[in-house]
Amino acid sequence: MKVISQIKLPVEKEMELFEKKFFQSMSSQVALLNRITHYIVNRKGKQMRPMFVFLVAKMVSDGKVNERTYRGASVIELIHTATLVHDDVVDDSNRRRGFFSINALWKNKIAVLVGDYLLSKGLLLSIDNNDFDLLKIISVAVREMSEGELLQIEKARRLDITEEIYYEIIRQKTATLIAACCSLGAASVKPESEDVEEMRRFGELIGMAFQIKDDLFDYGDDKIGKPTGIDIKEQKMTLPLIYALNNSDKKEKSWVINSIKNHNKDKKRVKEVIAFVKQKGGLDYATKRMEAFQEEALKIIENYPQSQYKDSLELMVNYVIERKK
Image 1: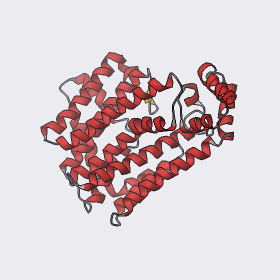
Image 2: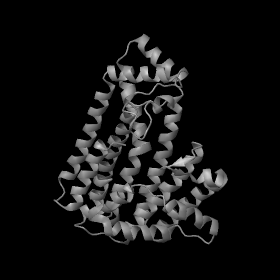
Image 3: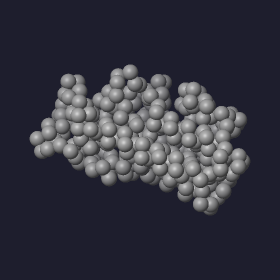
Image 4: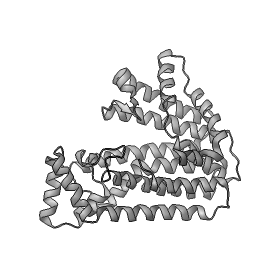
């Protein structure tokens, strides 16, 4: 967490004010809703998304933010929180960041309605203030996230994902949201400038690196928060596995696919698949690709003048690659 505090330092003041504004933006006349939104706000994670919004806004505009920046950060948190609440219902998940999920405490019906409520609050916050450019950025991100999830489900059934399709899935599922935070930060202070697209690309590259790092955790040690081999158990095609399959003969390929399809609950078999992927160089290849995305992201912000905000964003890019969970 020390790195996160360091990254947050130049926007600490903004983040404090943001938290107050975010909480206000959720308020309702319904006591039950207020109880639930209070529960959500008190269980926040690292808050990387609003951090990206403020750091980018300040980097591209010599340290200035405005009301649009706060609204943009709130909208992205409202809409993202809505998708998480719905995700927990879809995945039938009882925990979120170590706490009970909304559906675990209040059941699915209420969870779906709360998700809808947060989504509408986000949309109205933009519409009431004529932030249509910011709303468009976020709406595109939500559409892409849904498409990415559905593309992954469609492909997982057949386990025939190519590297290109894999990149498309993670671009939509993971990278598009970080891209939206960064382009939104730029658009809030410099609407219609070239920075908006530059920063979108910057965020997308970070998101790609972030997801590949997540894939690599599946082959790491049990000490990491995520249990080893969980992606294999869930029949998820990750980059190390795709690379290993692409570099296997017919017999090896059918053994791996059979293992994932029919023996994914067998611990010994899952361990054998992990060993096979390592032996085929899948982890080395994925690490190289991740580092290439990282380098490209750092290149984009090279052109911006030196500032503490730029330093924090560089730290953030490196943290994505070096984090331990």
